Every structure is written in C-alpha cells, then in structure tokens.
Length: 334
Ligand SMILES: Nc1ncnc2c1ncn2[C@@H]1O[C@H](COP(=O)(O)OP(=O)(O)O)[C@@H](O)[C@H]1O
Ligand code: SF4
Ligand SMILES: [Mg+2]
Image 1 (spheres, rainbow, N blue to C red):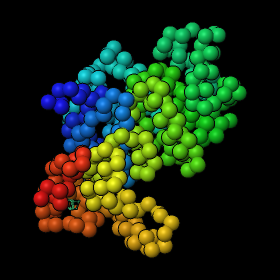
Image 2: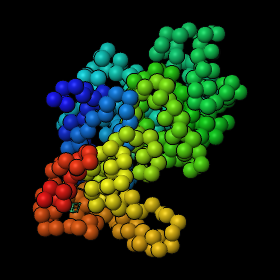
Image 3: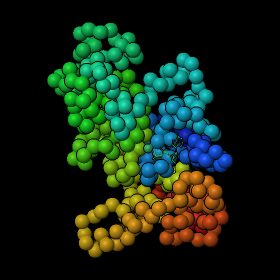
C-alpha cells in the first residue's frame, strides 16, 4: 500500500485549537474562539506545503502549535515520527533545534542592540558548540553569503539594514541551527513586491541546497504557489481544500479557493469588471469567529454563490478530488 512506503516528515491529524478571549463585559462569559478545527495534512521530507487563507483563518495558530508555542486542545502533530504535542525535556529541546521559524517581522527575532555577527555567532556557540574565534567568524560569513549578504553587513545593527536585508539575516539565523524544517509565517508580506520574489527565490535555493522541509504560510496564493508542492487553503479554522499546487491553481475545487484566485487583479478591463464584483463578495464583512461557532454547517455559507440547504445544516467532510487532494464542500460530495 502507498501509505506504508510514504512516511511524511510532518503529519498533522485532527488538530483543534481554541482560545478563551478576555472577558469584555463582566456579566457575559465570552465564547471560546475555535481558531483551528479538524485540520489534517502531511508534508513529505524536502517538500513545501503552502498554507493560504485570509487573515484570522487560523494559519499562524497551526504554525504556533507545530512550533510548540501553544498546546492544542486536540489532535496529533508528528515530526519525524515523534509526537510533538506531548514531548518534553531533552526531546523538546532537540525538537526546537530541528524546527526553526521565520516570521513576518524580522525585528521580532533579531536583537536590536547586537550587530549581525554576534547575533548569528552566539547561536552557533549555543546550538552547535562553535567557540568564538576564527572558525566561528568564517561560519558566520558563509551563512551570510548563503542568504545573499556580504562581509560588510557583519558589523551592522538590525536598524541599519533594509527590510529585505533584515529578513535575510533572520533566515541566516534560522539556518545557523541547521534545522530540518522551516516554518515561514508570511515571511514576505511586509516586503515590497519587488523584493518578495527575491526572498522567495532565496527560500527555493535553500531548499535545494539543504533539503529543508517547509511549511510556508502566506495570504497571497500567487506568491505561495511559486515555492509550494502542495497547497492548503484555510477558511475560518478549517482546511477547506488541499492538493498539488498545479491542481489547486488550475482546477480549484472549493468555491472559496475559486474566489481567492479570481480576486487577484488582472490587467484586462472586461475581466477586471467581473473580478471587481468577485472582490466585493470576497471582502463582504463575514461573520466573526465568535458568531461562526454558533452557526451550523459550512462556515462559507454566507459568502458562497453556490450555497444549498444542506450547507446550512452540516459541515461537509473531506472528499477526494480527482486530480489530487481533498475538498470540504457539499458540491464535491454529491
Ligand atoms: N492568543 C489568542 N487569544 C485569543 N484569540 C486568538 C489568539 N491567537 C489567535 N486568536 C484568534 O484565532 C483566530 C485565528 O488567528 P490566526 O491563527 O492568527 O489567523 P491567521 O494567521 O490566519 O491570520 C482569529 O480569530 C484570532 O483572533
Ligand atoms: S459546502 Fe455549500 S456553502 Fe460551503 S462552500 Fe460548498 S457549496 Fe458553498
Ligand atoms: Mg497569521
């Protein structure tokens, strides 16, 4: 059987995460926010899973659960056959080294009062036992050159670099630990579009050279698709569609994925008119997460052009898509 031969590097099964927001009115208990619900997916070693979806759909919560920055309410996360949700002690320390993160804001991971050479050098000492000195300096220079920076950046402070250069330093910092997996949470969203593709290309080079496995989160499908082998689309905490990148892009199965693809401006006046209407629908004020927990059925029902009675009653289960992947929509299960 296929499943016996194929052991994924990362396997997420039925992940669920809820938050209890702070009480705003003393007499009213807040509703739990279901940030992530029934999310399952896998990534093969050396491959990239691209996770997309609008702001608030639960992407970062999935990332933070994998990074063990939060404990999920339910589900399993296995990395290299080790259960992550319950691991502790030495195992957890070892895991933290294996999996590194690159976030949208590189300031968060860079010490503002340290020059670049000491930020990266200290990591090499802490995680790889490289003592300060010539060898360590050479390793820092090698890491910087891997991310497209040069010796002249060694003595710079983070504020002396551009946004793109800072993100390159954050990537070098993650690579310093020699991780097996990189979790990239919207790493290009804060950058100018001209620099976005350079940084994406850098991630692609790194994957080719180091065989790193990626979870690559972005809000823009068109950016994420260049690096991803498989795409997952999130909506209101659910993974509503997964599949090989080409299939999701050319034959989107879920009405929300179709909407995401149509919402991208294309320089053609007639197309644009149609797309503008789609965009209005896309940005239609949707129910917020608190309310979404109270309604039954598919979370996309209020914005879906194909909504049926059954959609208001039950959340569709996962259905296999002909050319690869799965979709959670009653249209596909009929
Ligand atoms: N620490 C938290 N406390 C309460 N609610 C949270 C917290 N973190 C995230 N949420 C909520 O969980 C949902 C998913 O958030 P998030 O995972 O950040 O989405 P995304 O990364 O797709 O924008 C949102 O409704 C958000 O408000
Ligand atoms: S289940 Fe129904 S409402 Fe939800 S996306 Fe499919 S057709 Fe639309
Ligand atoms: Mg996020």
